[in-house]
Length: 401
Image (cartoon, rainbow, N blue to C red; front, top):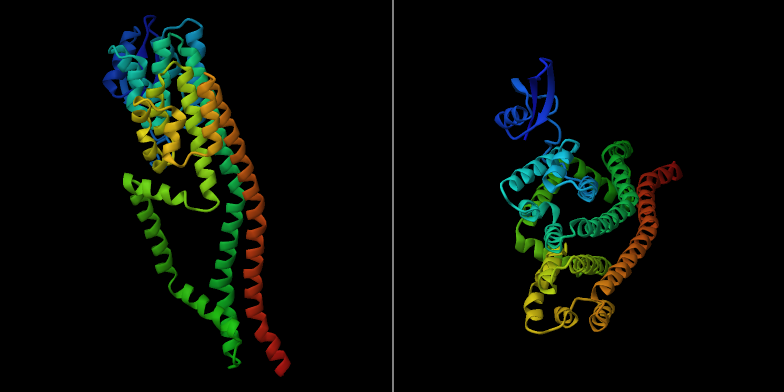
């Protein structure tokens, strides 16, 4: 959806120029004519049309969507109708993709759809939890309160993701720097020493011959090696698009010794917090469990949870249904069972989510504190190996002469 530069004439005869975001030039012209302007010309605004068109760019950031909902809640609380509130926000939204979605939502609401129905086509982008929250708010007649709970939920999820990413940034940069340094040594430094030793026609130590052979092999076949890595990366992303492969890859993640706890506890936290917010919004347990299981990022666990609604419908409790899956931690199961018996399931689910969020934070911090010295030690060993293989023949030559 592009921007259009419109030349407008007002009732006082004053000619102005405005940039407007619209699906087509006809929609743009219709909008300003309804506002009482005489539209003189409509052209694409090429200065703005290129914004946000990168295919690899994440379309809508979490902070932009949270900001939209905060402003939306404020306008509704101030007494503005939903349609007018969205119209006001559209004029101030800077994210092109969010603006386009909101304009489509506004159009659907004008056509007679409810707010949840208008947002339902974008469930993959905003998650089914958001749509379910809108439904709960519409049913209860308290949309601001339900959306406020969703904002709190989104912030916690976003903070957890940001914490993990920021914690892994330094080890990742350190590993990249180590590989870059090794690449320089292998491709530029080692070959020069190889030519230097060849002039002496001396028998090189085994460690030196191994490194020289490895260096020359990498240098001569660098294009094939990089091409192979590129093919593997593209193949990985292609396979990841297939649902059965995503399920298989997520299942493999749960078999990694240290990573299993992180992915499992993260899924438990998201499931518990999602279920709590839906129950607090007035959604029935049967419907809320189905939405919460789909919100779990691990596709293997999400598939295993598909039987939760039928089990609950057949008379099983939530804790008993989760126990059948065989992957839910015992502590979480006991807390959920206590919440059911004490009629405080929503509050206990929040407690479960908080406990596992804290566990994830502790594990990530421990992992980062361990991985940093490990990478430094491995980098030191590799560099020492290279230096030893390069300088050991020099010491031998000096001793012989």
